Image 1 (cartoon, rainbow, N blue to C red):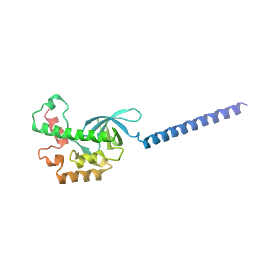
Image 2: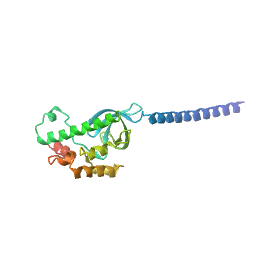
Image 3: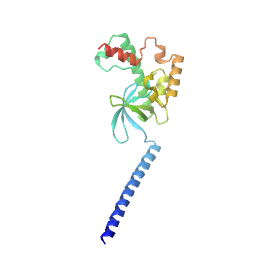
Image 4: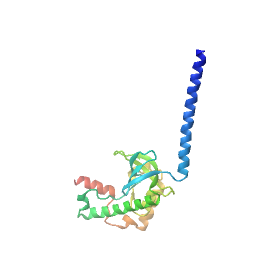
Length: 199
């Protein structure tokens, strides 16, 4: 009789585990169906600048996402920067605001939802990602094509869409769009480096 009880307990345990796993699969399928019906992607809570988003995923986790493959002009972060009279600051921040506004516009067109292809994370704990709208629009490609950002070559090897971003930048450069038509523009990475040295 004890052996029979042991077998029943083992079979019941196995059945519970199998049913639990099937339940997880059913939940995954339901989530997949929801995505199909338009509730897909991560919610953009804030466009921090031309290449950074504050995002909340479908589980409610909040994190910061830095755009992979490119670097956008800087925006002013302090009153000192906002009130700066330096031409290089005003130029950088002016392009930075234009890039930020374009990202906001794209995100709004996508219903404030984006799909992330996370490729890395940086030393600040931000996720590095290629970012697309639900209709497939690749945000980095748009910014580069319009001359509102530049390809960031030091990490281009971690960019799955490398060919697309390089082509988009080449088009903007050839047509002298955005920053490519501004002889006074300083690359964002050079601007940051110069300002760190002069603090």
